[in-house]
Image (cartoon, rainbow, N blue to C red):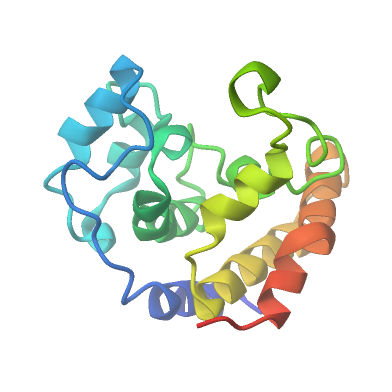
Length: 179
């Protein structure tokens, strides 16, 4: 798949993703960054209008919004990050990390925080994060990861992480339509 086709695939796949609305943008209220996301994204109800400059700095210059989004906000805003990355404009947000962490071999069986979450692993957490994504959205993510893998300048830890995430989750998720 070429970049232009992939971009169109992403736009089509996420075109019906609902805006979660103010107050539902983060999964936690425990940090200043999470609170800043609620403020900075509250009026951002059209992900197609978001510029890479905004995504790279939000919130408050940290560029860490992907780490704090609620599941619904991740589903809504992820395509903007995917497109910015494909355009070579995602300078702070590591989109690949957020799609692979928990699904790669190094992290999948690791408990998140046993004192707080018991035996819950990163794989379980990541699976929950993407559970509401439609089959078409999951397929677009799979195509994005395959594109990143095929167009990598060199093979190393990132390409290994992508391949493992595809093998452990994304390719299987794409084969199981639930919506």
